[in-house]
Image 1 (cartoon, rainbow, N blue to C red):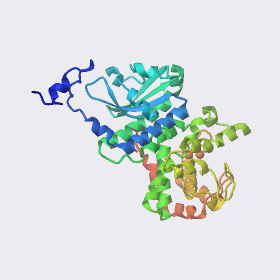
Image 2 (image 1 turned 60 degrees about the vertical axis):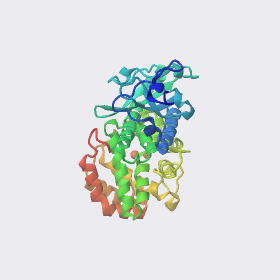
Image 3 (image 1 turned 180 degrees about the vertical axis):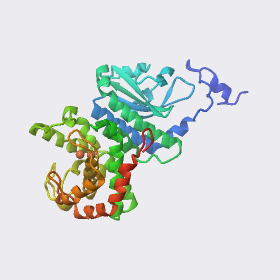
Image 4 (image 1 turned 90 degrees about the vertical axis):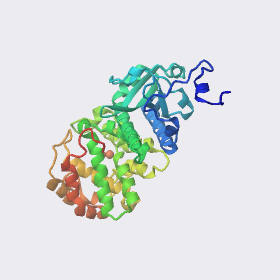
Length: 371
Ligand SMILES: [Fe+2]
Ligand SMILES: [Fe+2]
């Protein structure tokens, strides 16, 4: 008599479906579903991607080696996760965006086009960001942004494979949006990482506990994510902005707060996006808050952001050397006044300015390296 549940019995076709043999190097499904926290964070991040990019569905999946299937890891509609199904094996090939054979997905209301963006680390495809939209034009218009998000998904999956802590997976995905939002594309990823590192240096110099330093560091990396909704003509305009354009530009603080709203544990990131253009002397926006009414992380990111903007080339200005940037922050020029900064943060800046210069001048992170 055969033992119930034996291998032989499981392999017997039932319900018209034969369980395929396990390919070599197969990772058990339990391995995939064990990281609940990660999945929940990624579900939420997929939800933001869908909402902010006007999509219908987004999911993150892992390729199952040797099978024409992917394993769903997260989905903007967690209830629909089971719908993320088979895909053509060539889907993991080198093409930039391609279609999936996912019959049931196109049956979802409003899904007329599907796209998939490989999450790559070097030559390896670690996973996939899949999206469903109302039409191919929606996907085409969002392609660059989705590629940046897929790159961040790769960062998370690589950390996960190495058994390293996933960090804040939600913010890591949002960082993809933030990177795509930067007008200065070539330097976008570096600008974001650098501002995070400067903010961490300043926070350390202010003797904040390490946990807070790390929170500020991550929050700083998404401070400008709201630029995603500012038209590129405005972001890239070399000349002075009209009144209407200036208002639209300043709204990036509000858009950013909206993108980061509602996500659990992200109060600091949301506040930083909202208040990083407020000035100590009340001359900032969007509310003209003064002094300690502005949350400390936002006061820190304010200075970090100004330092990086001074050092970088912008459509309207050439890059400045460290000594000039240092002098402008401490003594002011026609655009910047020292009264705009929290005096404590200014004092911290004096202490660690050399470190900030080193971070800028090291050129880190180098291209293709995980920040
Ligand atoms: Fe900003
Ligand atoms: Fe910025």
